[in-house]
Length: 176
Image (cartoon, rainbow, N blue to C red; front, side, top):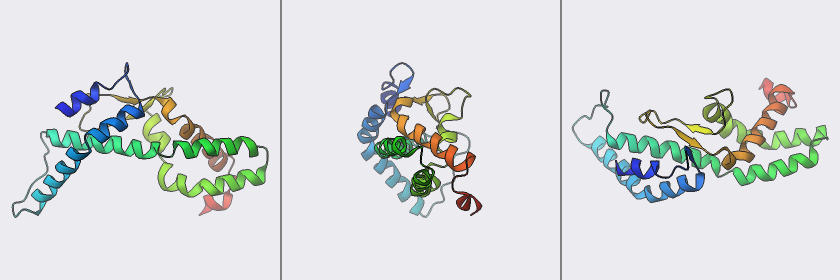
């Protein structure tokens, strides 16, 4: 379980940074592709491969960890965009028309990709401090990512949700 030891060594205290997670993903990208390719070859074989119900293999653990980190990494790629959106928000927050346009402009991105982000990563506690990445085959480890790495994403989503769902600034969209 070299991959797991290397991953666990990246923690600072109990927290991971996105920079270190990105490094780990790059380090294991070829192994991930190899492992996926080997599974595809097994699936094409004439012998039926039944899923493992009793014991999780090391490959399963690796693949699930990699996929979970790849997903959070994909979310993180929009952090700069959300920073710009928060700058725009500060300029327009007193204009209902501009706010409606701002929400409408971001509605598809939030609906398509970020609709469950806060629930998936920050709903593990009433006072969640950092993002929690759950890996179902590695329940014995906790993966907490520094909240500051997603500062703009979280702030944006909280404001967007308030405007969209609470204030219903686009009621025609909610009805759809």
